[in-house]
Length: 232
Length: 366
Image (cartoon, rainbow over all chains, first blue to last red; front, side):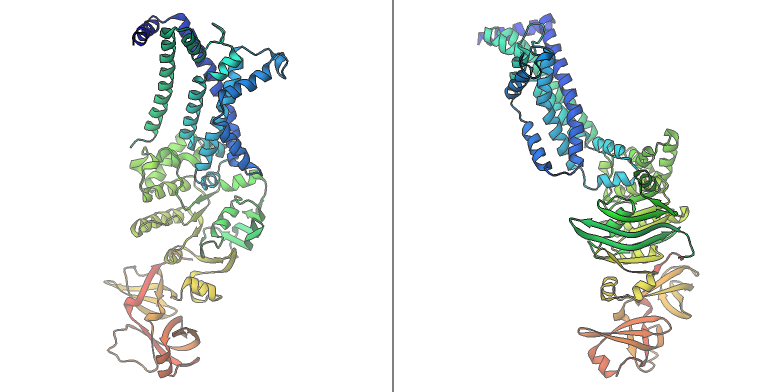
């Protein structure tokens, strides 16, 4: 019991004193996962919209593949990205392994199928005739796509939040491609794993509290937007 | 109709779906200021025809001409869609405010903010929506949502408007009110319109021309009276029903006791149209009584016309008589009465019906 109590006390001291190392780790996590989410939004939204709005042979298979990708195990992604970025690997010359960029790449790979899958689902859930109604209103193709995205914005936002929540809390890929280098690629999750291993529960708890706060903030924002958009 | 310049012309339209031709229309046109009703059973291709006129059907072939200019490139189709508005069966409102919904077509056209504001205000007003501009479109009743979708379509001030059963599933008073609003604006602005409807009285009241469709083809088209009284085949006859539809003009109205002039004969009826109003008198065949001699003066039937039987057709347990009384009239008689009265084609008879059997519908002047 003492361990928990002592850990909690020290953790809050660390947070209250705005410990430089803790803040640095939190900021890096936010930056890396935020960028990864942004990239996955760009790729997932555009490809997902394209897939949802067009019909082609093999579409069902592709959608199934994307949906499978929504639950991609981070360690598998970590392994795959590691191989690609390995010194002798296909992209080894870029010398990206054990850099924050490598983590961003891995997390983008994890989040993209989530955003893409949600986009396809959200677009296909819109009323079938909505596209015709928008075109009949005099929209160009580009205007139509934009209006459809606007109509699906709530589920899309949920998808983005799910993507962000997934990557900021994953540890496998970050540790494999980032290497948990202090002050360089150490993020909240990898630091928590390490501090726990060392028995530094106070530090681990402090990091976990921040992680939980991030997750809460994300969900709070999402809930807030949904409630504002659909008042009872 | 041919002397007028056609606004919209369609030639050799074919739409294929899954290797099957679902629509095959050699020609169809719409004139300036014309109101056309499309009627026919589900799956007849009515909605497909409207969407094809906007170039929105996949696998459509044929030519569409607007004001004499062929529409073929994507830019020309866009231009056409910006002149023709369409109201689909479901309101399909956007997830935003009522104001934003009505503004959507104007925004797509890149109108200025100030102009959008005044234009939207005008159309919110016209559809009695002025007080709910800031309401969420997701929280409207069925009738309100319909109003918004109509306001959205009219706000772009189209030259032509298509309605695909816009009033389906609405209660009769709401339907009536919306039809009147719509009709008023169409007349005020001189908009040509095509209405897909299942409601015959709606088709009669609004249109100058009725087009009957079945299985992807146009089966018959003509004025409401032509189509209703002279169906070209069994399908149209069964679909439009056998009610006699007579074009007339109200000549007197004494406390709802009205007289309507039909083909030089007065028809007594009950209603509240003012003298001079253009109307249809609709008479159901089962309400028309036949006698061979001048009937008893004490009969309560106010309308009595000498006429001649022009056609006899068997309708199962009874017979359908077509009469010529100076205007066409249809009557049903039992086989027993038919034999007793010694009826046959060419026989002179008296046809009578009560003033209360005449259902009056106002019509648009042709």
